[in-house]
Amino acid sequence: MTDPQTILEQARQGTVPANWRVFTKKRGKLSGLLRGSSHDPDPLLVITPDAAVEYRDASTTPEVVNFAELAAVDLKVRGQSFSDSTIVNISAWLDLRYRSGSKAKWRPASFGDGFQAIQGFLEAYGAHRAQRGG
Image 1 (cartoon, rainbow, N blue to C red):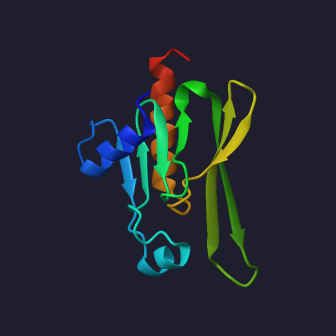
Image 2 (image 1 turned 30 degrees about the horizontal axis):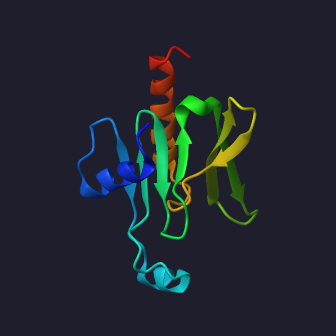
């Protein structure tokens, strides 16, 4: 896998291979000001054939999920509704199980429930496993 900073910089420049998925979000001026991150680059999630790299802000190390380190990925979904409402709020995330035995919950931090990002992650991880025979 390439260095996460290199991946993020390449995505910011807009010169990425066709098999990469890039998700961006404009940082709100008010939320950026309140968090002290108004001068940081906008949040960015890049999914490559080998990893997912997410940049939140300058004070947080980019989160990297290297697909080669994963033993399994499970999609989880939860719906919540109130008895007097016909609206259901859906929440989705991925349960990651690493070859080392550790577990983690993954959801793109800067992109809400990020259904498209989660789908992109699952597609890239599935292709990664298929190419590596596992």
